Amino acid sequence: MKHILFIIGSFRKESFNRQLAKIAEDILKDRFVISYLDFNDIPYMNQDWEIKGPSKCLTQEQERIHRVREEILKADGIWIFTPEYNHSYPGLLKNLFDWLSRPMDISNFANPTAVQGKKVTVSGAGGKNKTASCRAKLNELLEYIKMDVMKEPQAGIALGLEAWVKGEFKLTEEQLNELKEQAENFAEFVG
Image (tube, rainbow, N blue to C red):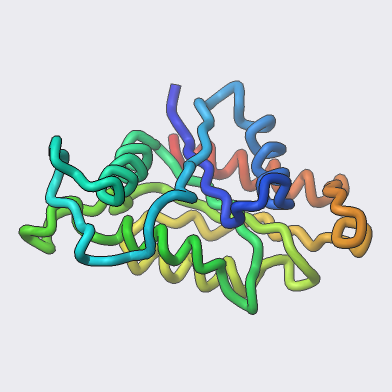
């Protein structure tokens, strides 16, 4: 069975995007192995900590980055669920993809990265903009780092006032159908 790795653009335990990912997981669980990338312990991008490949003498920072790259390499597809922060994507995603865009062996920058050629799609739950600005900018970044981006359809979920006030996440039937359509298309895209 193929493997899809979910990346959540918020570290909040009950983030709306984590809840959105759980719904997508239910849609895909019979066809794919689904896992979630744990990357909240990677350091800020710093070339002093770059890795030249697996080694028994890695620093803690290098071990964390190596672990994340290994999880990415094992995945057949990646699905990102992210909020929109200030008309863009969260800094934690930028930091993650800054690390993942670097060659795994920096002795030659023509060497592959962990994400090069990986199939990816993006969804987001947020305000009235339905994370449209965030998704557009993130799609641009993902293409720039040579990922294979499925741009359409991408579910953008506008949360109602109740979600923000009470912290409750509920999809309308139309929103659920939008997520299902993306899931079906991504399943075909991954193959």
